[in-house]
Amino acid sequence: MRTFLLHCVFLWATSRRSSSAQVSVPAAAATVLTCCEGDIVLLLDSSGSLANYEFSRLLRFTAELLRPFSLGRGHVRVSLLQVGTSPKLEFGLHVHNDQESLQKAVRRVRHLQGDTNTVAALRVARQLLTEAEEDVPKVLLWLTDGVQPGDVDGPIKELKARGVSVLIVSTVHGNYQVLQRAVTPPLESHLYAVDIDDVDIITEDLRNAIIKIIRAERLDVVHLTSHSAVLQWRPILRTDSGYYELQYNSMSTTDPESRRTLSGDSSSVELINLQPDTTYTASLRPESNQRLFNTLSVTFITLPGVLSPAVVVVSDSGPHQIHVSWGPLQLTRVRRYTVEYGVIPSGDVRKVSFHGRVNSTLLTGLKRGSQYLVTVSALHVDGKEVAMSVKACTQDGTEEALPALADLQLARLERQEVQVAWKAHRDGVKGYWLNWEKGNSPKTASKSSFFLSPTSHSMRLSHFGQSGRVCVSPVYSSGRGDGFCCTANSHTDSGHWGKQ
Image 1 (tube, rainbow, N blue to C red):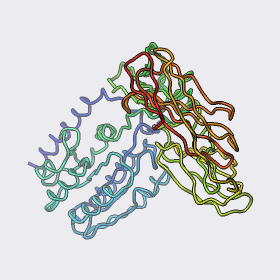
Image 2: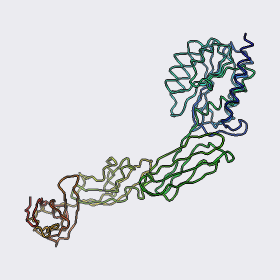
Image 3: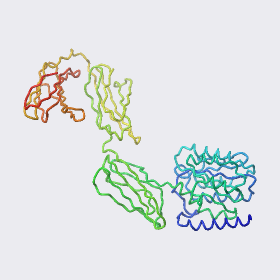
Image 4: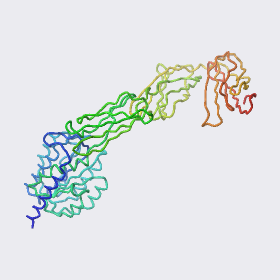
């Protein structure tokens, strides 16, 4: 009966190999596969139920199965864990970054010949796969004769619940029903029962099954400027097996879609002549007559033409304070602003940080009549830091108390124009700040500010509409003085409003 079973399994494995021939994977001995990124834990049965010959055959099979893969972080990481009386970790996921190192390590593995404590080994495998830092596909490849696997249903279920794909190669001596429950569907490509002398015939099928799980099918932006973007992807095709169709366009304009055809050996492309601070979408479609591939896509935003802070303004200085503002605001680009300030040349430097939505602050508690160096720096979301510095002086504060304006009036001239007029004591006046806000609600209001010479006592405002608020404040050498505000609400063609 056992002879008949082995014969059937051999035929089954052979027929499955021919049915999967449409999946094109480069020959193991000639090509390094850079298509994939993932973690693979090899759970190798090293118990006494396997003969030394069977164990050595499984080791050679494992080495050949893994030989084409590019190894290391960002590619494929491999760990080998032996099943015996106690689990033995031969090497972890972070150890081998090249094939020469991995192949030597596999050849050094020795047969434990203990009991088959698979449950304990599965607990170690779960720790290896689920505590890894990288968020990549995880594979457990269990190589066993299937003899007395133990109560593995619980540990296997936990692995599957954590997103681990379970594949099994059995040398057909054991409990096939337990192995059927253990593998991750589909059964026909994830469970292989084959005589040890014929194990090599499933190498390509099993490798294809693993590749389907860990193939890194994504399009990444690896470099970005205000006018260009470099896209990169894992090689899928070869020069003689097809080509790539690239399409990209701006999502915020009506510009036509751009198209490019790239050779099959391409793995990156630079897009140029893009618009600053603009959202783009790109898609890459591999075209091949051998099989169908998924279309890869990515969305990105080009950098602004000018990186904030490009302007830093100091205003409203007094004996103990300075108002600092900066711009432009770039809400999607700047994570945090930091303002550093200290007395020149050797004062203590103080620092204050703000969210990327803030573009001004009032620095208080400053030293009278001193020169300060103020530096505004922005931390952008891509990690880049941009800074700008200005010098500012606090006033000595010897001026007398600042007098207020004497009067402020608004007079309607035309339907959309008003005249603003004021009176003030001119002694020590360096000018006037006029702030004008029109509109009834914060959502519809628009604001304007003007600095006027000390000889100015009036100003005509156009497009005033039916309502608005005007404020005038005198400016002295030591800062801004008290001012007046007028609010206008009128449904007539002319009128006067007094100060408030």
